[in-house]
Every structure is written in C-alpha cells, then in structure tokens.
Length: 116
Image (cartoon, rainbow, N blue to C red):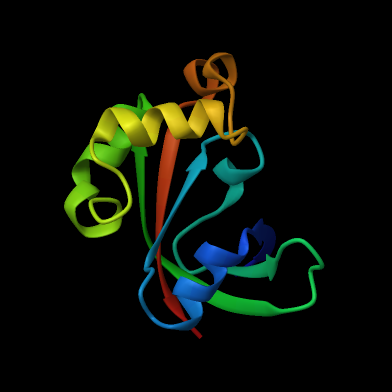
C-alpha cells in the first residue's frame, strides 16, 4: 500500500470533510496511473496546504474523455452546481484544471474513496 499526496481547492476539500464527496476526478497521467485500489491519498487544502484529509481508494474507473467521465455520476456529483455535462467539461478546460491536449493524451480517471 502506497500513500499519494494531492492538492484540493477548499470547496472539494470541505465536501470530503463533511462526507459529501466520495469521488475525485483527475487526469489519468503518469503520476495517477501508479495509484491502485487500497492505496491512500493525503489531500492537502489549497491555498495554504495547512489542513489534510486521508482517504483509501476502493474503486478506480478510467474513461477516454471528460464527457464520459462526468456523465456517469453527473446527477450525484455535479447537478446542483452545473446545468449540463458540457458545462463541467468546459470548466475543466477554462477553469485551468487541465488542457484539452493533455486530456486527449492521458484519458480521465475517477478515484472512489472512503475517508480514513
């Protein structure tokens, strides 16, 4: 079992802390391909990295593109904050999370987790 470190914006961090967030959506790049079921992630809260939460990965799903990735759990994870799946995809690019090019190159991943 390995522990990985990831940074999260305060909204997502706080939703994990409150038990409202059970999935993390990321680019499936070289760093994240190393994460396996049973591993732990220590999330650090941006911008000061002064708070942390640990989770254990219990399921990993990989998708070819953000639309398919977001569509599967849209009603549970995004419906209250976005009007459509397309809006989440556009926020991924326009919000500075990931570029279209790196997304097409690496695929997308959903890490399902339980807080520990």
